[in-house]
Length: 431
Ligand SMILES: Cc1ncc(COP(=O)(O)O)c(C=O)c1O
Image (cartoon, rainbow, N blue to C red; front, side, top):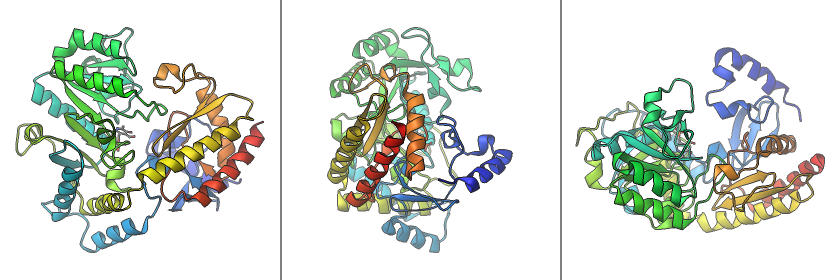
């Protein structure tokens, strides 16, 4: 497959943007090579500047439940554009959206719209600190919550130790306020909470971790996390930026029956436009300005075009209930992929939950893989080979072995059959 035009654009892009991209994983550093430059997308497909098309399993990293350029969302966006695209004052669209969300999401009584998942999580930490009068935050190793300073940290050298910055530019003092606990480990969580619980404002978790591979958690573990957090008076934050409206309309909150104190949303909630949101009970949300003393604002918050896109997405999700069909299609697709992968010269396995999936490349110590320590060391190197073989056959998977894949309703049975044919050819080349 020829990528000449993409390569030329990438050389130009590197001159005007760090690494040539505007979000790091897009730079293909993890898998090597130059990113493909996409000039249009439709349904399950993306089309690059060299005239190549790919069946897209990245789907803009999750927001596109109905595939690219869904006609109902397109119509809503075009309608919104005709009414003007930013008012900077109260408008009815976020009201309708807020009413819909609070009527459908368990435990969500009041919601604040922002412009990204990062912004939602960042605001929630401030809220939790104000509401509890505490400073420390606990996160889990292997969960990603956007590029919020306090959460862009990794575990220290021992359990219940101070975390270390996971990016240059994060002060040691900021990292010191965060504690990092392994996933899938009740005993470790209990130990940290028994030591520091009374200082911890928020326990922040992706209830379906999907940013270091797909690491499904046992329901008993999630329930213990909720119970122990409550015992210590720490607020439980479910970061449902990926899982919200993806695993079910009510996200993991609905699936697990657990009621977190605060919820964060992003991705699907904007229908492919920049929207994030956070919320919880009236009691907790009244801390937020102008009701309360926690300041949080945004020039483009609840932008009418983004609100219209998100509303159209969620109304369609309510009307169509695509979840059972998506889950069944994902299960069947990944089973077939596993079957085809049996001829590869290395061991691999597929993990899937709802319409998310992940290919484990190498011999995992456990099945399923639930914590980052269980991911094979070969993951990055072997996935890179699979990624390029797929790309060459017209399959676009996430350009990192630690990112998950997504199905949308645009991945019809015919599209998935075609994808499996292409995967078969790709695997043959890797033999
Ligand atoms: C679970 C989770 N939280 C937060 C974020 C940050 O969202 P955004 O990229 O919109 O800032 C992400 C992004 O991938 C995410 O997966």
